Amino acid sequence: MTRMSDGRYAPAGSLIGMVQRGRGLGARMAVEDPVGVAEVVHGCVRWDWRWDGLDERGVYLARLVRDLGLPLGPVVEGLAGSQERCERAARVLGLLALSGSGEAREALRRYVGEGEHWRDVLEEMARGWPVEWWEDLGETARARLKGDETDLWGEPWVRWGMGTRPPEDGPGPADPLVAETNARLLELLADPGERRQWGDAVRLLAGREPEPGLLPLVPSLGSADGERPMPLLPRAVRRLGPVAVPAAREWAGSGTGWLAELGCRVLTEHGEVADIPVLVADLERDWVEKRWCGPVHTARGLARFGVEARQAVSLLRRFWLWTPHSYERAGYLEALAAIEPAGLDGIHVECLWDCEEAARLLGVRKAKDGVEVRERLAYLRDDEMETAEVRAAAGERLAALTGQG
Image 1 (cartoon, one colour):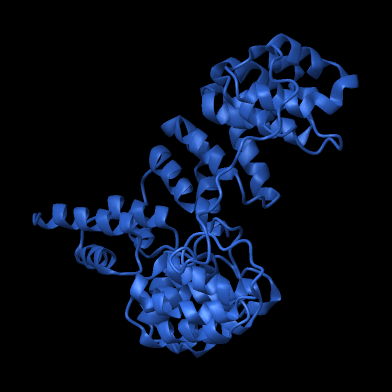
Image 2 (image 1 turned 120 degrees about the vertical axis):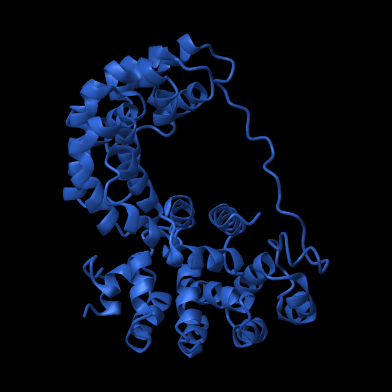
């Protein structure tokens, strides 16, 4: 078995690999061996296997702890770790408290009085718990504050008279180019001697009506090291819509990484059937180079072409199976459903156990009717851990299936 602490993902088809990725099938398989999977679940609380901050794991892991009857001790121990580990443990414990665990609730309340990262934990409690569960901790919090805090914003601080609402962004400094015409901004961008003003010029163009005159200049508007585009340049280009497609085809074949990426992004949104091979090749490069963030945009672009993009099916299935970036997983399934839906029935059922809200919503909408599906829909509808949107959708689908409004 892959060691949880060695920083590597286990194979996607293994139980540990599926739990690391938050796959629904991993949660379903875990029921068959609760004792054996305990180390895996606790390990995923201790070590962060999310690919980035957008990925969700809290509800997934909290449900595994609760539904498998796993001990809370290893989760509570996580509160004493680093700030990141403490936050993960607090998230799981907070959800368990919502589902009725008095042990989890008391562990977090106790931590507020003695833990190192108590403010983060307290603010998490205030975001997710009923007010009466934490309101009486005001004196404890007041005693622990050093007296010089200037960032006590929102709850619970406002309720206790210790803080203010989050500050609103005020007006920024005056922009020296704000009065310039588009023509003048384009002149600046065409002049290498004015490079220090390029950032401001691109930013202004990105906020104005689409400017086709920008297209010939795009290849020269990379960062000083040539590794990325100028900030907001992709936004300014993509707002041009189909007008940018001819140029994007040239960029997609260039040897400049960021320019090729921008070209492909335009083609995913506005390209034609003839551009499918270019987009499939881009997806193939992402797979070979293990670029997990972003291929879903290409997948959604290919989905526009339906069955015409069937040459991408194998890649889309691989990305869905192997990606550690769970936030993008539902997008691959949506693309497959648009291009070649055969064989997705079981996967849509699995989605009802997925770590990502978007995937669970997909399962709620698409899972084929059956006893297991109805039971899971009722579970999602009634679970206090679940998001309001999923609970509502599950209730509506179940009502439609059973004929009970």
